[in-house]
Image 1: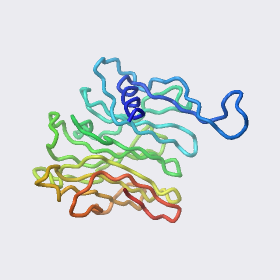
Image 2: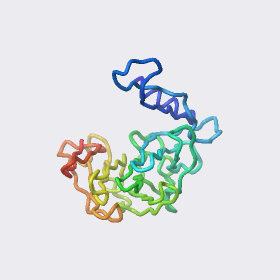
Image 3: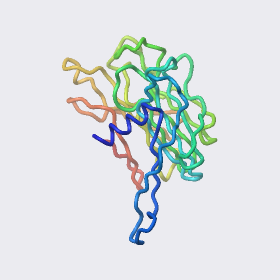
Image 4: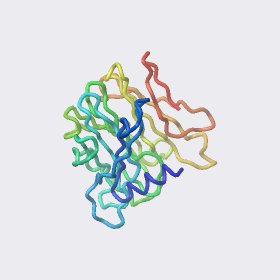
Length: 251
């Protein structure tokens, strides 16, 4: 809890702690130890009421580039934004545009869980998954909320973004989507998996809370229909991992 609170405090101030692993000065050579460096500011937002929420980070396995995606629920745009570092986290610069018009709101008011998720494939393709809509006046459960996947082949400097799930309006059991998660097969970067929670919360609608997972075999360009992996007790957004045998695990 203290670590989570510290992370929230750092990101609320536009900061992120950069952690490197290596031998400590004067330490015996018994193995690596963590060395926490000074915090480096990622965002350049000067607003005193800024609230950079739900940051996620990924590292390019080929180049070492770091990518952070975050959202500002108190900002005017309430967009999800990407930040890149080619200096191991010491300095940061804005990444490419993720959002598609008119669906530019992915920082819904009073939500929990990830607003967006980020991952690199083995081939260096960068993926960002997020839920977005037109501006819904900060209301908690208005619909529709669509699922989008942005993909970049130039390390996050530009993106091709498409809808991965087109949510209907007027039906919160299908149109209300939250908590986007993402993983890529470590051996086959064409296999991309996205997950999210679907449905409206509350005792009367408990059975409608789905834990959805959808799969892509073409590098995230298209996805099959979502599969609900929860039972009649309902679920929430899933975290996923792919094993060396290509089996997807979701919790």
